[in-house]
Image (cartoon, rainbow, N blue to C red; front, side, top):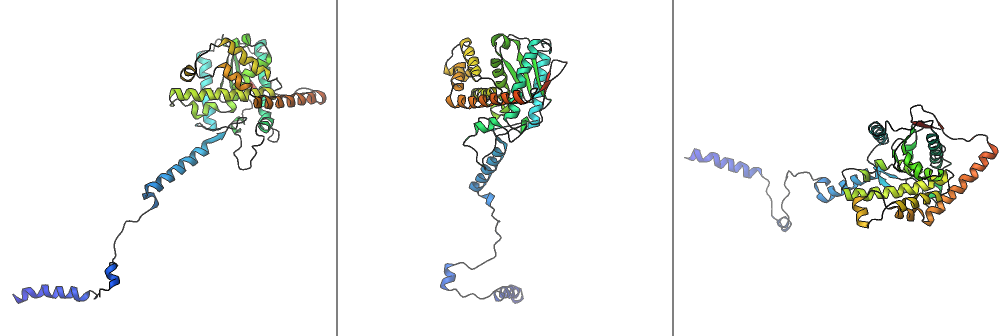
Length: 346
């Protein structure tokens, strides 16, 4: 019995004798003795508030990286396509449109109507390249006039890189159709219907319609997030109407920079206003992708827009007079194609 109880007593004694003797003082009574505790290491991302803030900052930086400044209107917009992806999309859409609908309606490129439309388009494309600094970044009247008072060294500059490298890629097709409209696709693709020539008789009116379509390409509306098909219909229509107004503004400035008087843009809007039926604001929001011509006419007639357009028009006319006086031949764009597709080259 004694031997059996001795082992536990010795073990208890060994444990108690090996531990240091601690004297309880008032300080120790207030603070527990220091012990080694294995704790989980705490990082900032374990805090929900900090993690949410970091996620928001990251998403904001990504959105800012994808945002661009639209030339002439200086609007920030979010693009969802790269430049090459946008051009590939435009090529496929344009080829499908011609192949499925207008393949047998294309007007001969040597027809007077085709030549007339191409010559007008030459002036618009040349004005866009010069006005946006594609030819020479030091000579960009469109950007200079529309950015007065907004030149800040830290501010993002208007995006024009998608227009570089289009020399020889601009394509125009004139097709027989009663529609008095034109269409555009990224990559410099333009489709004009003969109904446009029947409705608008003067070169200036036709030039504004073409300048409007080029305005869509300048603003990269096809790559804008507002043109995404996954948006709700009513919201997408609001974005599309805003794009039409923006293309009108770029178009009238481009029209003036090409040497056509801005009044031609007002004439186009007036003619379309007389043809279009009036509709309510609710119908405009829910059913249409284009603003009413009366609204577009009011926007084009704004004092600031007309003032900028007239400044560009006077400058273009002055330059034409100098060119005619001191230079023989007009610098511009040559067009040649035997398949009905016009190619614009500097």
